[in-house]
Image (tube, rainbow, N blue to C red; front, top):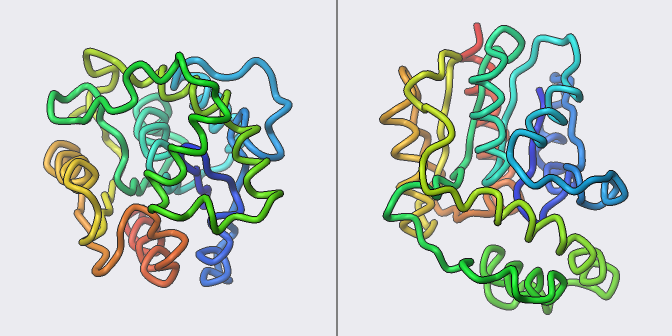
Length: 230
């Protein structure tokens, strides 16, 4: 099982989930530009580079993959490219920015200092006051991740779909939180309605950060993904 984190996140955010899956061989990694992979250059300016990295992590193994947020978009794209290697996938509230209903609140963000943008983004996604709850090292780390954040958000501001959800052939589950914002919930619903045979899983009482605050449910979602691979 391979986990792929979202924007301004890191591999350690899956720690609570992984602890609940002692019977699985779980692989987590920091995506290019983030945390322990911050020094990996160049910073990715497209989703395909992140897919290349994911497939490099997978190597010649047969795997199931779960992606959170933007990690879900990476996983969907990887499943299209290499369905022979990826046995099943799970995506939790992946961004679908080519739809007209997806908000463009980040339009124009490239004019901001990446570190400052990271601070505002963290509070928007993790919840108001989340930045204040970080310690000094945590804030410094997220500010240092700002360039990677800005680059990948620019990369997904696509006017047309770059992936055909209806062409995904691997077993898929799409997750969403009952308390998530409308466009996150709708994204999961669209994936479930478009990817053939996709299962929609509702996380009761959860919002976008379900892997952090509802690890039991996220672990069960992971087991659902593995069960769909058989």
